[in-house]
Image 1 (cartoon, rainbow, N blue to C red):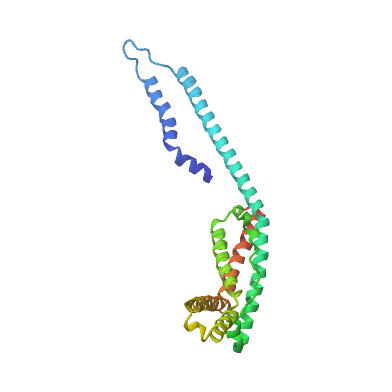
Image 2 (image 1 turned 135 degrees about the vertical axis):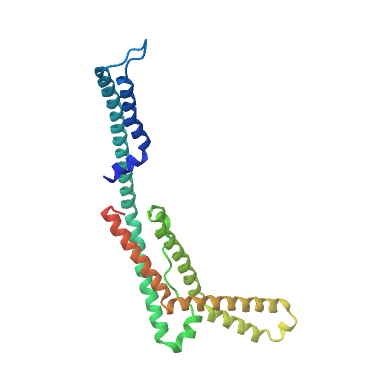
Length: 245
């Protein structure tokens, strides 16, 4: 019914012409004969109208059938895309579940052992890397919003992953050792001073990144974002499995 209404709205002027055309011809047929012009009769009118309406109706039916076939093919292609994305969606979901458990454990440990927080911030943590192969087929994901959210989260997680893997304690120890060993020489060797200055800047930068990463972890922000993504993924997987996305 909705398609019929849409068709009428889209082709209303053609339909008006189809209806009004025969009426106009009918008026011409039934008016009295004009001098030297022979007026038509009812039989001619019916013959004309039959041919006229038959051609128009045939054209409309052909148009509707063609449109129906195109719509059906679009639906088949869309359902095919939905099914093709399922392996990628499931793989990303498994990866996010794994990352969520790791982040939740880190958050719990950080908040529970407050006396160790400074060591945890400055220490090196070998957090699981994001499986880059999962994103080799992300172009299969139909929902563009979900795809963008996943890409943004991946970049955010990679930044956190990189920050946690830095050994800040080792860098600080290296700087302190340099200052102790080169106490006399550093007064005359600008290269030592420059190296120590660069190392100090690097330490400040890395410490800021690590503290920001731990803030995101301990506050539960990362887990919350993962939960939101998992919810969208489950919805998309369910819809794709049912073919109604």
